[in-house]
Image 1 (cartoon, rainbow, N blue to C red):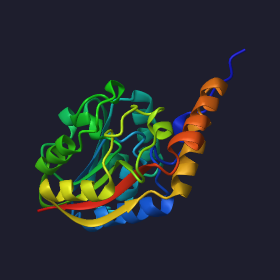
Image 2 (image 1 turned 180 degrees about the horizontal axis):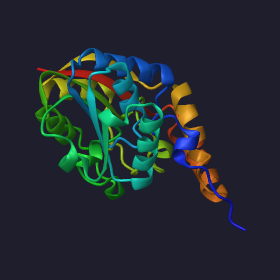
Image 3 (image 1 turned 90 degrees about the horizontal axis):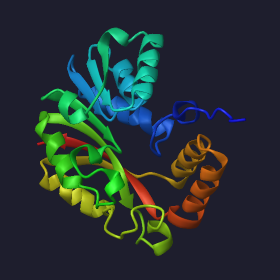
Length: 239
């Protein structure tokens, strides 16, 4: 008899190593830069961070886009339950096509593949293409919360094996900051996810897997990339 597995949004607050406290700080920072403007989320999942921004900026409007119809449906349910559905549009589709051509604030958490090679191809993450595409959608002064994988320590064979199997899949944080500046952004905040954020994320994600896959995932993390694979949380302003 098959056992029903919990949905991702039942075990995770965000589909990334991101604590609630950090999310609230990022949401407030984005909200502080909005004055009746529009905030968009590329690869919004169930739109939890986007909804927090919307709540903190009561005169704003929000657009979230994701390919997963079940996650978008959960986001719509949450928007309705929080009384902000009239200001939030959540769309199933390609974010590069459906995010408005110009917005006042933008969120992209673990979404760089929208503008680069599919992650299944095992290519290096195309940070430059993502940053260029996001800068093109922001007027001068527009704010971006960009979250993406990085190396926290030099990659080992054990760390890369369950990922793409290559040392150049990710950048280190200083390299990413230089790239953001070269792409037309001022860096006003930058941090690597903590191990506590990673442990919470991995535990929640693994809980949604079948027993066999869960065993493999735990080994990949605890015996492989824990403490090596990081996740950058950047606060960027378009210049």
